[in-house]
Image (cartoon, rainbow, N blue to C red; front, side, top):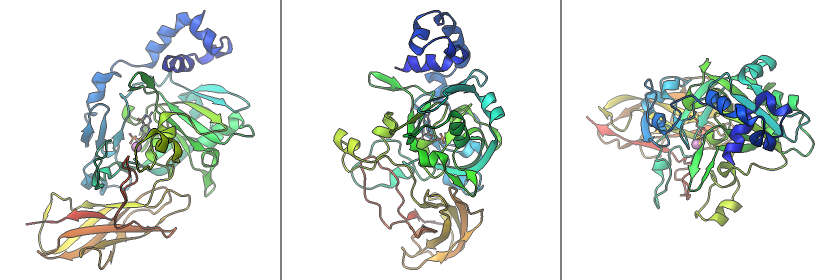
Length: 410
Ligand SMILES: Nc1nc2c(c(=O)[nH]1)N[C@H]1C(S)=C(S)[C@@H](COP(=O)(O)O)O[C@H]1N2
Ligand SMILES: [Mo]
C-alpha cells in the first residue's frame, strides 16, 4: 500500500500518460528509481531520526520516533515560539524531502485533480500568513493519575505558537472544484510509520466546513511552507504541512503530499482509531468514539519551574494560556492561586489575544515559607474554564486541569 503511494506522488507530469497501476508496471517504471532517489534525501532513515537538530533546546521524551518538548521556562519568553523551542511530535522517522521534486496531489470528489510542486503552489495561490498555536492532544499526559497510560509522557511543553505562511487550503480546494456530497478533507503525510506488519503514512481528516472556514474574512487553514518566516525544518514538515488552527496538533499533517476530498472521514489510523477519548482501550470502544478535533482550554505555569527554589516575598509567576479551539474564542481571564484554589489573583495578559492562539501572562504574588503550591486556571470568551480535576481516559488526551507547581523554598 505504501509503495503505491510513493509511486503516485513521484509520478508528477507522467500521470497523464499512465494510470496509477500501469505506471508501476510498465514503461514509466524505468524512471521511478531515479525520481525516488531525488525525492528522499540521504539521512532520512532511522539513523538521522535519533538526533535532535543541533540547535534544538528540547528535552527528548522518546528517540525513536523523535518526541521532544522544551523546558517550560522557554515557552514563557516569546509569544511566537522560536523553532528551536517548538515541540516535535513524530510517529515515525523524520523523512527528509527534496523541496524541488516534492509534489502535493489533490484528488477525490473534485472537478479537477492535480499535482503541484511547492513552488507552483506558492506561485499560483494568494499568500496567507496566520498565527496559530499547535498543541498535542497528549500535552500534560504525565499529570493524569490513575492506571498508567502508554504514549509519550508529555509534560506541559507539547505546545507552541508560531506564524505559519503559505497558501489557503480553501483556495486550493476551490481551484480543484469541490463536488456536492463532499464532507471531509483527508490529509496524508510523507512519513512511513511501521506498525506490526504494516507501514503507512500519518494522516487524518477535517470536516469540509473547517477546511473552508474563514475568520475576519481570512481563511483559517493553511498549507504552510514557512514557520516564523523561515522554511519549515525537516522535523516540522519540510517542505509542506497543513496547519489547522483550533484543532489538536494531529490534524496538522506534516510532509503533506496528498489531499483527498471525500464524503466521509479519513480511514487513516490516526483519525479512525487513535486520538479519541475512551475509558477502555478496546477495538470496539475506539471504533465507537468520535475523533478529537478542537483542543480544550488550557494553561500552565512556566516560571518559576518546579526546580527553582524561591524566597519569601514578591514572586513573579509567568506562563501560557490557550482558549478552546473554536473560531472567535479568545482568552478572557487568567487567575493564579497561592492557597490551593481558595482565592484567585488576576494575571496580566502580556501578549496579543487572538482566537486559535495562546496568550502569555504574568502575575505578581507574595509568597511565604508556608506557601505550598502555585496554581493557574484560565477562562475563555465562551465561558469555559479548566476543571480542578481531570477524569482519567485510557489514551491520556486533553489533560487540562488547573496546572500546579509545587514550590521549592530557599
Ligand atoms: N506526517 C505527520 N504529521 C504529523 C505527525 C506525524 O507524526 N506525522 N504528528 C502530528 C502530531 S500528533 C502533532 S501534535 C503535530 C506536531 O507538530 P510539530 O512536530 O511540528 O510540533 O504534528 C502532527 N502531524
Ligand atoms: Mo499530537
